[in-house]
Length: 455
Image (tube, rainbow, N blue to C red; front, top):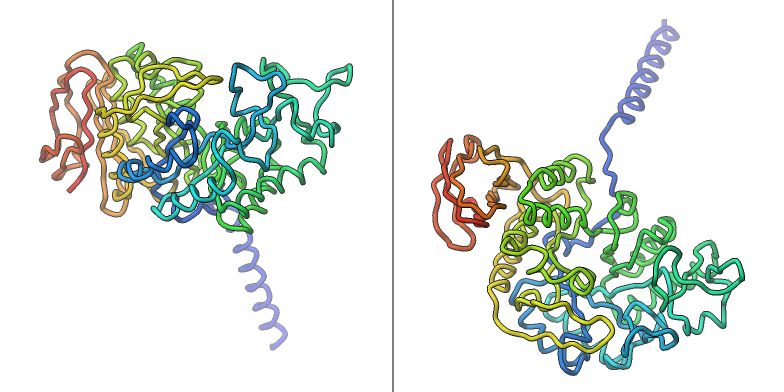
């Protein structure tokens, strides 16, 4: 009898364990396995073009702008490359930031190592964080590595150094990531700035040109020093798993341009759908209407977005993602800054600064706009002018935001089905109160936008 009971219990336990094993295979899993720094959950980001930021173009001179950026609601200060610039095959008089002569050195135009450490300390003392641009794909022609370790570079058939294939980047030469010793060196150089200057992470130039397994290992070694924040100049899901907290959202930028210039919303709606349905829930995407590449090579925001510029800026502040402000954008920068020469930004008050400030501060306090999985999912709110008006809703832990944006040059009377979004709201910019019922009609001026914040 005991043997029969034992057999029955054994079978039951075995079956239960098998069921549990089987069930585990079907449990949803987070694609993103890395851990974001806790402070990045509701962060905003600002790109600094140090050469053009002040007449002096130094770390010390830039420090004077930190109180203004803090007041604006900036959290992450992203500095374009701070390293010495190559002289051989240099473009223009001053050369490109992205032609790096020494990965552990400071560009003397900006100051010295102590000046940089002082800047990092000042940023930290104000409750902000700093990441630096990292150019891991290539170096300047006169980087000492070309003499010390020429085997770390790709070569032409003739055995000569070469720019990155398919590009006209003739002021730089291409690295070879098949070399393990080179990988160790570059990982060490990344760790150097975290250890020596206490920076908080990196923006990786053309991150997708560098193997993912390099980034995954580098991220792990960096996180052993301190939790870092990593931004990839790329747009690819594989980088989110164990490498980068955030990638660029080029797709949103391109669809916003199309929406404004062609007044066609199909692509923008498709972007929002893909973001909800295919982007990893805990991935961060950087949203923007300008950055150094766009400004210098693709024209001004005024040219690219015309009368819909402010509508586009507001959109980048309320969709899923972390909004970026580029140097001078808050001052209404209306020209393309020279990339290889001195070209100082003109600082003046502009309505853009008020827009960024309101959006950034709303992001800090309203959990619906927080980053990754702790923010609210974008839910489409149906309206009867969907060829002109985008309306959606985000909610998290009783915080809710209801953006309505007219992407047309026409005045629009739009009926919106607000059955599930009833309540009292305050509009972010005008502070006007709205009492939303089950159906609501809005009259929107050309390019008008409302950011309704639930009370």
